[in-house]
Length: 210
Ligand code: 6SG
Image (spheres, rainbow, N blue to C red):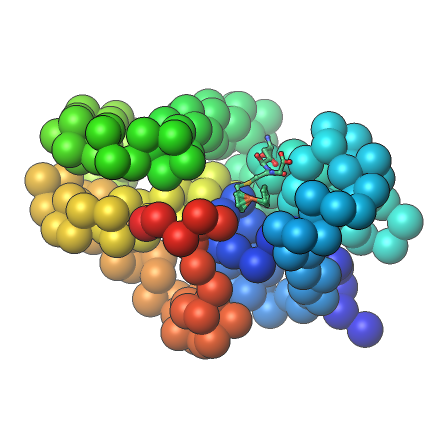
């Protein structure tokens, strides 16, 4: 039996980081796929605390909110730093990733045609803070915080992969971030997942824009 169940639309979207985390740690999950039509016509929304997906189940524990799910997995699998100080720094960076993800989602779902050029022009400014955070931690040779991977690393690396699709080469101006991204996506179990159909054949976003 799989360790967990993920209920979501047939997209990577907000589930990509948690899937990457699970795959990288050899954990298993069942995908319960909800189509746009099922979501629009059924009463699924009522079974989700905030009327949104993803939903994540671990036995009788039912969670929504993608960052809560990431934090839960972080606590369960020792991907939340070594102490309170590291955990808090991990929260801080993850909140920074969330801010960027919201801007990206607005672009994808609302302003793609009119906002893409400005978004891309502004990317160096958005990426610089992450470059700086990495540099300050052992010159960028480890992870965002401390010397072990955390849930925030999967969240950031996924975001960077999406940005590379939106604007190929956009990481060139932040070489430490680029090296970190390349290093994390090369972790053997993660790489195998990223190269699998379970990842590759699933669109990044629900409206087909990327
Ligand atoms: C959409 O926003 O994929 N959940 C989304 N949309 C459906 O009715 N703070 C939480 C979190 O972090 C945000 C949840 C998130 O978990 S994710 C949701 O539930 C709703 O609100 C982005 C994504 N969208 C898929 C999608 C959008 C347009 C076409 C496909 C869903 C299917 C059809 C309409 C909405 Fe659709």
